[in-house]
Amino acid sequence: MSNRVVITGLGSISALGLNNEAFWQAIKAGQSGIDTLQGFAPGALKMALGAQVKGFDPAAFFAQKDLPLLDRYSQFALIAARESVEDAGLDAESLTQAAAVIGTGCGGKETDEMTYDHLYKQQKTRAHPFTIPRGMPSAAASQVSMQLGIQGPVFTVSSACSSANHAIAQAALMIRAGIVDVAVAGGTDAPFTFGLIKSWEALRVVSSDNCRPFSEDRSGLVLGEGAGMVVLESEAHAKKRSAHIYARLAGSGMSSDAGHITDPSAQGAARAITAALLDAQIDYQAVDYVNAHGTGTQANDRTETEALHLVFKSHAAKLMVSSTKSMHGHALGASGGLEFIATVLAIRDSVVPPTINFTGPGEGCDLDYVPNSSREHKINTAISNSFAFGGLNSVQVITRF
Amino acid sequence: MSSDIETIVKTAIANQKMIDADSITLETSLQDLGVTSLDAITIVYEVEEICDIEVPNDELENLRTVQDIVNGVRVLLDNKTAV
Image (cartoon, rainbow over all chains, first blue to last red; front, side, top):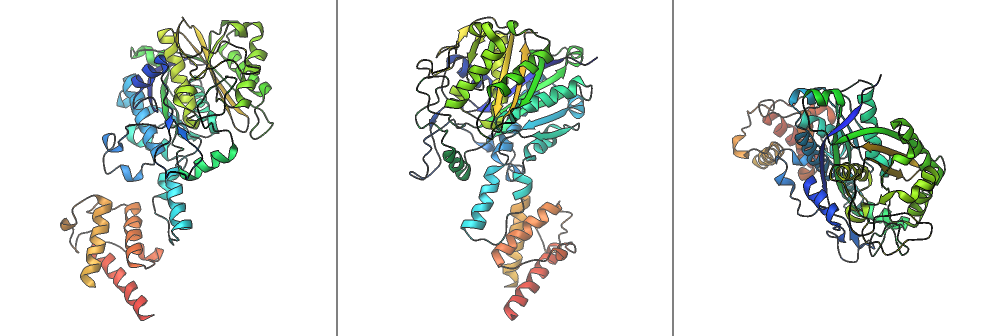
């Protein structure tokens, strides 16, 4: 007998705003967080666009004494985790017993690159002592546990663009197994560092004009940053404390392509979706909405559409499918968290997020992508897809509570 | 140079602990200042950078007061000049 999992808290920071209310208002309005990339010398980069967090002053969120040890990716994680916990109304006792599973694709790149700049470029002979504790891939998870007083299982999950989705799955599994009653889970990333941007440029998957998922003239992804965190809870624990329940996390599915390090596989993605539906014990014909991985690259959008056809067969034509990355950009390890939140709120408000910048269907992209404007429509069952580089796939099934 | 070393060390401690450098005396114990091991290696890092010296790991074990850091730095600087 396993515990059932519900969602009781949401928190985010992204290009669409410094809190979750701003995020959701922007999604519903179909606003873009993508803009001209700021903060780098003109001509130094080919990358022209970014979905950067705007108007962010770390000093407004953190005590001066804490900031030196907080990489930007940890700052985002803390802001979103704190908001999710406050939203859930959790008391200190519940947090003491809770788990935290924090996804990140990149870790503390700001810190690492600063040290490499000192050593390689400035020819300094020693690294700053904070380099490891500030930059390590688990730093954000540790900071969340320290600042929120979370003393149960806390660790980092890293699976590139699926990190947050996988993290949510691990947290849900711990609740179902009865290991914890409460977990903070999601993802964070701050990838706008010189070396990382150059590395993304080298992959030739970054758009120079805009992110247009599933469109014929789509030209690639646009990087984003931020964090999306949720509070998951056993249904019994949530009911006992009369918590507000947003929705049910009905099931999780994971798979690996075991194929190519960058090329996606429709079969691999389809296996994750099928596993998630099986886990949730939900018939594929019950699914109303798919929050797609939808990166805006040629390969992803065609392959993801093929995967949806494989799983949903003739029902695929009835699905509403959208990529909110068209608005918050591809925030890598944070994406799955932001998209999970968008999916939960879509169910709550009966509003389907749009795929903005849609100019007309690309070859092999023949589904209803909810083009350009959000749509009022009741959703009872939705899935949120994350398909990472290296073929690491994770899918969540969320249902109306 | 002695007072310069003192200023450098006090400033490094003050920066790391976010306190007023004037509140630190040579006799102040590092424990009273709440200096953790991570603080200590960061303070030493700052001093190493400014003074261009290399503080051996085992020297860190014996630091109890601000004076201990100042003395240690002075010895290292004297050795450097002698070379």
